[in-house]
Image (tube, rainbow, N blue to C red; front, top):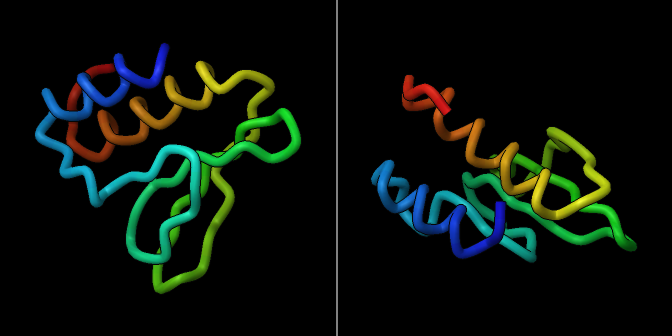
Length: 78
C-alpha cells in the first residue's frame, strides 16, 4: 500500500502517530520503517534499541507489514 493509505488505515485503527515512524528511526517505543539502500527495513524500537522485524524489496510491502503488525496487536483482521 502507499504511505497515505497506511497512515489513513492506522488512524482508523486509532493508532497514535507516536506509535510509528515512516522514513526514520525514532528512539522510543514504536514501529519504524526506514530505507536502507533501496530496501525497506521495519524495526520495533524499545528503550532506544531497534529490533529488526523484516526486510523488504519494496516500501509498499513494508507498509503492508507495518499495518499487519498493528492489526495483530489490536486483534483486528488485516
